[in-house]
Image (cartoon, rainbow, N blue to C red):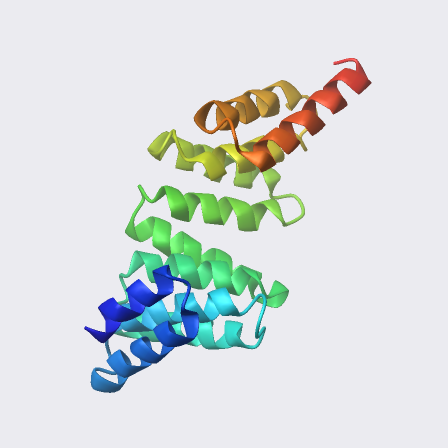
Length: 196
């Protein structure tokens, strides 16, 4: 009940109240993996703006969830994303996301998150593109994967037409997508300015 109430409060944006409910759930059942996962999510959401040191607490909660349920794909994905925010932990982040994909090969989100991490590393852009493409084979309507693929392709010489095509798909799926519109404008400006 505490965990469910915590989820409701999290959905309402009442993060401190959600934390209290997840902590109450863990007080009653310290090995409750879902409560550890949800507490980690809330702590990670707080980390960027209000308390950067809460990121380490979120990472600890994801790890606690995995100690109880090592096969919890969402905890591996969330742990990988959280670890990737710390530059020296990127290799561990990649490993966590790869575990998630091994456990659930049809997780479009895991492929997309791995692609994002790889796209930030020198020389790994082709691997990132492959992950975005894998995510889109699983879920062709995955807007963020189309956007990230477009952005990655735009950085590869000769792939500008493919990047524009991906951006067109973003805007077909969501014509009001502001980042997609901005990216499309930049791609078209680059294309028209370079004579391609």
